[in-house]
View 1 (cartoon, rainbow, N blue to C red):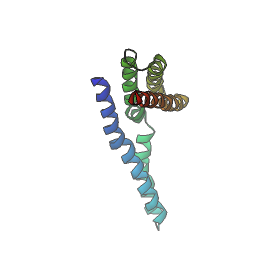
View 2 (cartoon, rainbow, N blue to C red):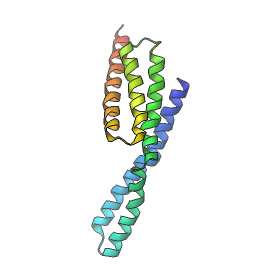
View 3 (cartoon, rainbow, N blue to C red):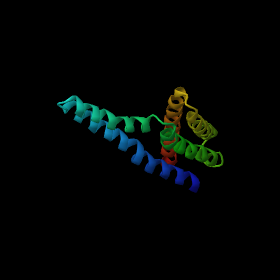
Length: 135
């Protein structure tokens, strides 16, 4: 679990530093582009936006935003097999982790499947924690 916590922490830091910083840059540059009064200004904003767009489209960004967290979920699912969570939740965590790691291959459908599996997995964890709190 300590390794899983480290990877969740790494995901948080990298996602905030890389993903959201580049999204914020694109939003800011789009406003500047809309307010530009000359073609030269617009071209400079497009050139600046190309960097942020390239980072967000890279496989490294997928590793930062999906694979790190998916590896943590995979480890958490493995730990859950021996805990108070049912086997379905644990195996769903394992599947979520594996599909997220597979998303590095570049298949867009794996990103969507990973997001759906992670949502269901978190719902099942929340439901079990709610039930544990009621006992």
